[in-house]
Image (cartoon, rainbow, N blue to C red; front, side):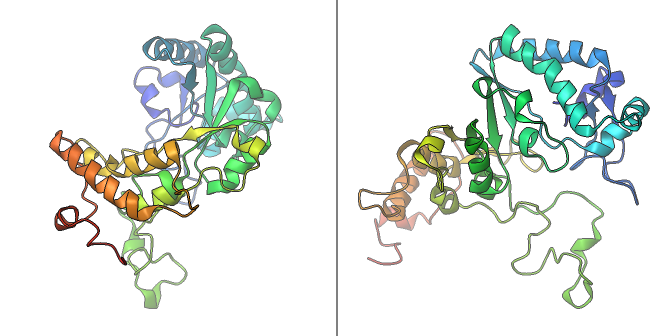
Length: 323
C-alpha cells in the first residue's frame, strides 16, 4: 500500500485510482511499473477504513511483531488519473504530500492499535519520484527493506538510523533472468545493425528483456555480503536478509526449482557467513554441502534444482576446478 492495489478495485473501486487501465498508454507516462494498474487514493476517506480492516485482519492472521505495509513503486501518473488528485496537485499539493497523508493515516494505526513495528520497502524514504522525510517514519517503530542499488542503499538506510532487511535485487531476486513477460515488445525483434539505440534484448550478454537479469546463481547469492561497507554500528542495524521470488513467471509447476537450493545458499551465508576461518570464501566446501542438501530435499519430495551432475556427488571433489 498504497501502490500495487489494483485488486482492491474488485470490491472497492471508489478508493482505487487508474484501476484496470492499460498500463503503458501511447505517448503518455506509464500508469504502473508493470501490468496491472491501480493505487489506493489517499484523498478518499473510505480508503483508510478499508485499509485498517485489511491491516487488522493481517495482524490477526500473523501474530508477529512486524507487519510489512509495502509502499514500493508508487506511480505518480496513476494518482493523477483521478480528478480529485489533480485538483489537489493544482492547488499546490505534491505527490510526496499524498504519500505522507497516506502514511500518517495508516502507520499510527499499525503501530499503536495493532502493536506492530511497521516495515516498508526502501522506496518510502529513497524513492526517486515519491518519498517522505524521516519525521514521518520514526526510527524506533520503522524497518526498511532494501531492494535497489545493492550495498549502497543498505548503507543509506542504516546510516540514517533505520533498521534494515536486505533483499538486493542484484543478488537476492530469484525470479530474475527468465526473460521479459510483457507481450508485443518490438525490442525482441531489433537486430544489432539497425537497433538505433534501442536495447538489444537477444544479443549475447543482453538482459533478455528482464530488468534484473542475469539469473542469480547460487554462487552469486552465496557471495553477497549484506554488511559490506558498513561500520560496526551500522551493521548492528541490519536485521538480516531475505531472498525474494516474485510470481509473474513462477507458479506451482516451477516453484521448488526456482527456490531450492538457491534459497539454501542464502540461508547458510546469512546464518554462518560465507568465509572459512582463513578469511576466504568457502565455495568448495559449500558446493559439497549444498549438493548433499539438494539430494536430501529431493528425497523428501522437494523438486530442488540440481547444481551438478549426479556423477559429482558420487565422486567427491572430482568435479572441482582444481585439487
